[in-house]
Length: 270
Ligand SMILES: C[S@@+](CC[C@H](N)C(=O)[O-])C[C@H]1O[C@@H](n2cnc3c(N)ncnc32)[C@H](O)[C@@H]1O
Image (cartoon, rainbow, N blue to C red):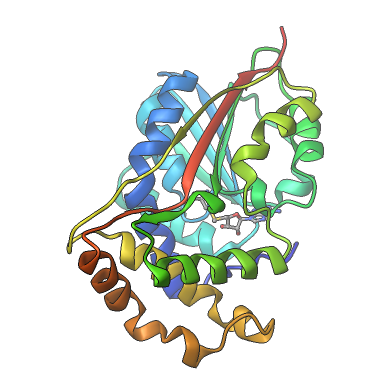
């Protein structure tokens, strides 16, 4: 198993589900545009607790199937529990590493969200997996560009928080702007040029989830930020961070754009 920087503590699992609610419609849009349709068999790479698998399941319907794989047994256990609760019989989850995964069952689509940024060589992984699929298989990925986060007018705490997040991920070897690298990654994998779309939440006002969203990422990364000498707990003040961020943006009558997502999709050559 390769080291996964965010871990799977209970709060982190909860953060993933909160994030999934926040950006779920962006991913759903990409999956639809890419052509996920009733009856398809889908493989979801790095499925975590299953949110993308569940989006895919609603598009392929009861006549299709979804297999989610993730290297973290705790995440898979949680994903299985959620599938059972939702009576989604067409969704299965297995523990497995994307790095050496062998596709044994035929698939029509390979999808993934926020997985390629964690892989040491995403193009090599996609190339290896594409070689195991039939011609015309759809590849769909949804990844972030963290450097696109901004507030207008600039709220200093937002800029500082994003710098801490960005630097800590980079120190851990995570590709913080994987979204912009999707085009070259598809090409290096030998896939056709992908179609792409960038989308982002654009948030304002006291009730936006965006303040908590950025704070939750920072909370998960804080121990690593401290160990790497990027920020101290006292500097970050994580327990009051969301409130301070909200107050700052409201005082500026500002808007906040969390990191944008880029979707990319292509079918293997027939
Ligand atoms: C940021 S989470 C995204 C989860 C899910 N795709 C979503 O968008 O809600 C990344 C997931 O990738 C998994 N992961 C990272 N590297 C992996 C690998 N080499 N093989 C399988 N899973 C991996 C982690 O365990 C984690 O659950």
